[in-house]
Amino acid sequence: MRQHGKLEYGGQATPQRTCVGCRVRTAKSELLRLVRVEDHVVPDLRGRLPGRGASLHPSLSCLELAERRRAFPRAFRVPGPLDVSRVRAQLEGDHANVM
Ligand SMILES: [Zn+2]
Image (cartoon, rainbow, N blue to C red; front, side, top):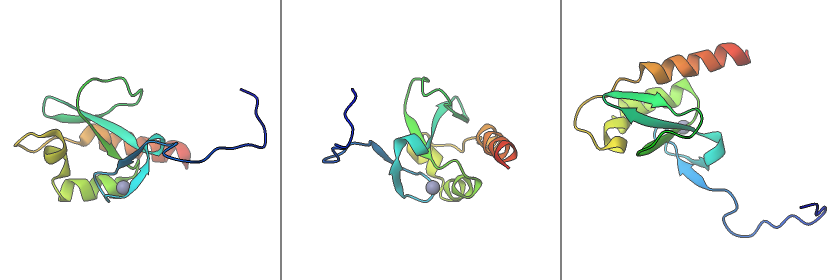
């Protein structure tokens, strides 16, 4: 594929997902995929973990919004609260690396 100067941009070129925190639709590639492992929410960094996923902007404010809204139990269809400490650690780690 070496076509220059002709970018076709009709239709849904980019799959989109809704962030469970701020509820903004964003390109899937810009969101962090989260999956549930027992009562933990864990980041699916390679996009390979099976099961129902939830999407989140890789930002602590969206994580906090999601927690406040109890978005995770809803997204994963479980009754109880879920532990998001691994997601938080991931986001805090990202921050440290970027800054
Ligand atoms: Zn968000």
